[in-house]
Image (cartoon, rainbow, N blue to C red):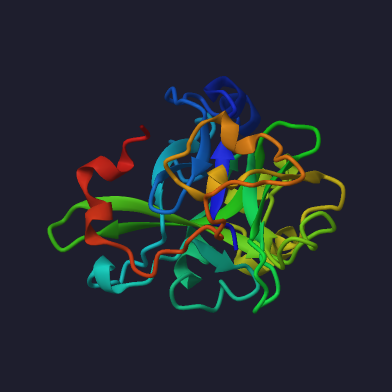
Amino acid sequence: MCGRFSLTATPEEVQELFGLEEIEDFPPRYNIAPTQPILIIAGDRRRAEGDNRTDRRALLARWGFLPGWVKDPADFPLLINARSETAAEKASFRAAMRHRRVLIVASGFYEWHRPPKGSNEKSTPYWIKPKQGGIVAFGGLMETYMSADGAEIDTAAVLTTGPNKEVAPIHNRMPVVIRPEDFSRWLDCLNQEPRHVADLMGPAPDDCFEAVRVSDLVNKVANSGPEVQKPAPEADHSDEPAKPAKRTAKAKAADAGADQMKLF
């Protein structure tokens, strides 16, 4: 799974990589957690015939996917990830996989290595980032959910796949990473069906990421500064019990409130 990630690139860097006409300013974010707003790129902006401007747009979505048929978000599990192998068939993701594929902008992600069951060892957090730095684009799915009172909220999930060489010793899943040369094909939901983009959802190439052991500070969402990405000493004697990023069992109705989509 992918339970935390970061976005520390500048708006200008994001705008250039994704070929956006415009983008709102935003601060660096080092510890993005479920139910928080995340920056996504959609390719669904309608243009008049003959208009050659890009159809891509940047927008914020709540990290926690809500299918349109959900009656009460409080009674529905928080879907932060979708398995790429089965998303096209699952009732929750099928429509989005066909019609609303997006790119989720990140600078890297966190994963926890869990010790064997029954051991007294703590889970170990890692910051997994591109070796060459820069931005990565996770394959994602988007759904605009309308509540009973007519309020709309954009929601999203990260697609996951099997691990590459760097991630395999830590966890058995990692986010799908879409390469820049494949952005257009991934976002073209009008012409590209899920079967046409299945080849884009394999593990990232080996040697493109590096895993850095970090301290237990990342376990707390309140710790949101650059210190969460500092390499940990070989022996970490933090009093904070290390636990994997906690996956909330249920989405709360309050998450769809007006304040939810404020970036900071």
